[in-house]
Length: 124
Image 1 (spheres, helix red, strand yellow):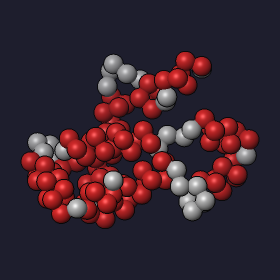
Image 2 (cartoon, one colour):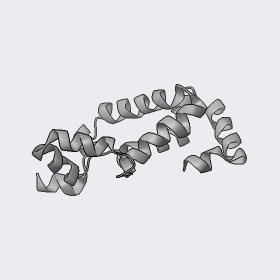
Image 3 (tube, one colour):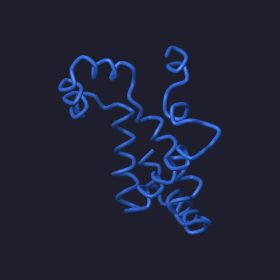
């Protein structure tokens, strides 16, 4: 996805949409959709949660070993920092903040429903 965002025609169109966003660049529709995807991919899996429960140090060791275990969680962080952050500087962080605020302030859902896998909720 990061490579696709760097393609000149794609980049030009996305920059155009950023300029046209009503509430500033962080609120652009495409950027909010990317943040939704990033947050979804960054969730800790049940396996990782189990590892955390067994040995926090082992979990942290696995989490920081990017070369051995390139996960969707790691890729989503790379997308925000390297793919979008290097190009748009502060805008992706502001967009992430806006997305998280919308999740926590939406009255129809709780933060649990927004961030936790539904199948996991059924087993709780």
